[in-house]
Image (cartoon, rainbow over all chains, first blue to last red; front, side):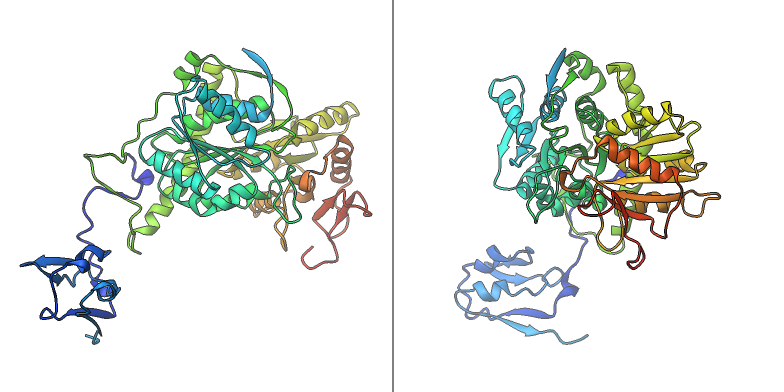
Length: 86
Length: 400
């Protein structure tokens, strides 16, 4: 197919597109309060919540800081903290 | 087979002959008869297509995009407000490089409410990346839809297109239409087989983000596809002539322009009336000619300039108007001619708005105005307004 008629279709994964730099607030988990229900993992729209030993761990390469995990957590163990300028 | 039929039914027969596979539809006057006929074809088993009833034109186009992404030959039809409601998704179709073909019955936009012929619905979608072809007759509607599938599915085009017919003048008026045999259409139009399709087993990302470092190339690609379509349409017309026995000259058609002092550029069904008037006036020794503008996108700038470059005065008949500026055909024709040595005086005649008849008398007055040469300061005139001279320049107003 000529380059000029290439449709915007990606056959590779979007892993290379790191969107973490868009974030202005970051989720910080208090794992002492976490029950391991993994509601955060289910709701994360960017699949940025990973599971390590049955507990959530945020991948900050992709987390855009939307706060849905904090909103959905039934134990209220996620705090959204303003990013320090680095 | 020759049959007497409306433009709407000609569009439906064309979709059936093109062996379309998915037809998402929402009814709107005066387009409804197209999807009614297609529903009948599908219900009777005369056409192997999935009809999808949806709740709006926005959804109809969304379903077209999904079906086309899955590799189906896809058809829909709409008009006026329905096309406007599709607006956002028209960009998704062209940006995704999907060769969806649509029958568009051009009709005025409200308010005040009007269901009659007017091109503003189509002109307003000028920049969506859709190929736009205006048809003059019901036969041309049928042939154009077949040609557009052939054109749009070419791998160096891959763009959606609309075949446009004037509300009621074509959509609801019967004319004899030659329906080509299915085997001949099959020879002209091979099955659609795109390089990428959405299917299980071959995952891909459709509609993802393009950051500033990649977006511009995709947009330029649409333009290249569009400009390639201008060349390919001429080839498709030749192939159509060979295989189906008819063609329409490609992007524009010159009618008696040889030796003409003045030329009128027009599109849609009024071209037939204009042919009649040109013939009459030529018999009277008046040197008038006509250019039928078949394609609006891609815009045939160089083809037009070749024809009008040597004329003294050129008129453009606009069945729509860009408020605060002028008719869209007029401004584009003038843009095409700008800076060329000996460019003609170009005048805009805004006529037929909201289905007002453009009679032979009206066109004769337009040609006479052109033959009489430039009068007054105004290059833009509205034609046939109540309680006004037949041709009324907007002179005196700013930039008129």
